[in-house]
Image (cartoon, rainbow, N blue to C red; front, top):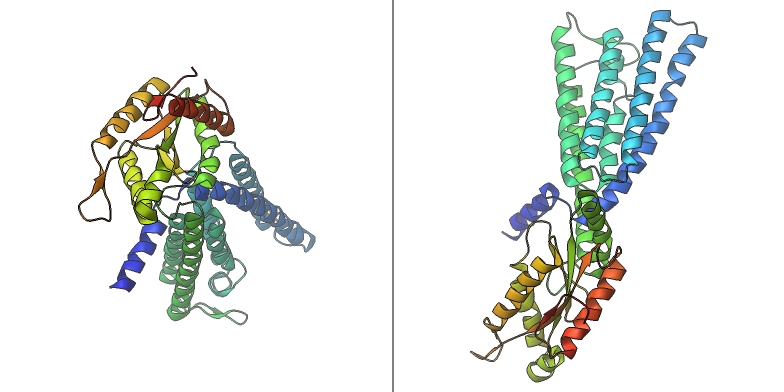
Length: 375
């Protein structure tokens, strides 16, 4: 049962949408892959030039040169897209699918002239393995599975077409005979490379998830938040929207710890987190940045944010949490300070500073209140 749950958890992570830190790392990985692609594409220009110096067939040389120019042009387009300041979430799938398709197309052209060299040779085919392995740099398990499945499907289709159209056994002195068993082994190797890379991606995702999450509550921590906020601000500026930051502090938390102990203090923290999570909409976040301090990131104007947070502040007092002392319960309250992007600042540090200033004002006024403007 435990092993089954572990497998389901692994698949959920692989097929699930990566969090913002993983996506950010994936964007830089996509740029690195684009640079490698551009470098390898430049090397393809040497192939028709070498054939020309060797006195090869002119039409074949022109065809190879045309393919090399196209590959280099596409490589520069992918590189330009990867350098875009926006994070294009479809880009890794498009560029990865292109890589697999180009490898298959080159093998198909090679098979038209020498099928054993195309299907039994390792030079071009190994780029399938290389392309699948490079998905680890994008930190997205879905991309790895997509690329592996696409490579298996396209190469399997190519093998089926070549073998199906052949009038006689395909063999050569240099590359031997093309057999169903041999090609099946290659498909298995593609599957194994996909599984190996997916395992590595899963491991990296788990490590990033653990480093970006608060161990007690499971919500994002300060490091994750500071990584995410600039992207949210950039998107808000581009779309003309407002982002409101709410700095929330549990009132008299030290007294909870002193009177009820650490276990109940942890229960109080989890109770508050569960309550605040209920107010979050799509693409809104709650992060823990200190012992009893939390940050709400809401996609609405400061006035609407004040109404939402104040409503949950009042309802928290009506939902006391159960302590470890039998049926004894305790009501909690919190204070909060709000700051809006871009009105109160253009950076995470500026907004958190404004929100903290208003949080201190809420405490000075007696706690258990939400302050949205400077006094």
